[in-house]
Image 1 (cartoon, helix red, strand yellow):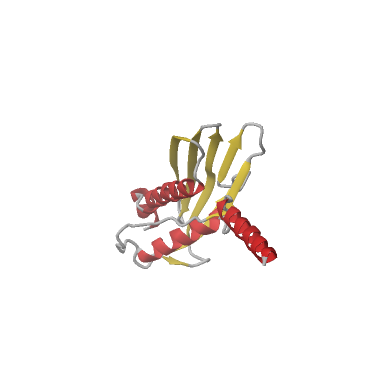
Image 2: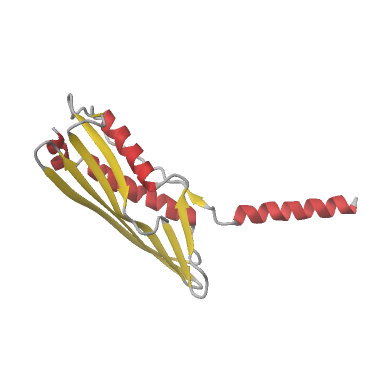
Length: 188
């Protein structure tokens, strides 16, 4: 009976400690809350998303004397951005065709939350930079969308809060792309 109690106590402790571990992957799910207004009538385009970052992680936590903790999402950032933009452009009446004359290319130049963890405090700096190139049969338009955020806090950074903040920041950047008048007029 004591063996069963000891085994149960060990399993319970292991289960609790595994819950306290930092998650291995982030959940990236930008929320786009804009009205679905048909802006594109009989317009087709191609959409490509390219990630030019040298490192593909989203969160980097640096603590003195320790190896950096790096976190990514299970799905690539380029896939998430591509799916989100495609869904929203379709709501606006745009159709996608790999042979279309219009082309939209989104280039991810930066997407990182850098956390500096001290003994009793932390500081975060996040930066998202997206370049959007729109080509029609005659011209090319290039626009850059930047979003920066920084914060400080006591004790240790909460990964769930960092994840939420990054999703909000990414959502704002993508909404800026979707609502940009120059891009909308260039596709038309």
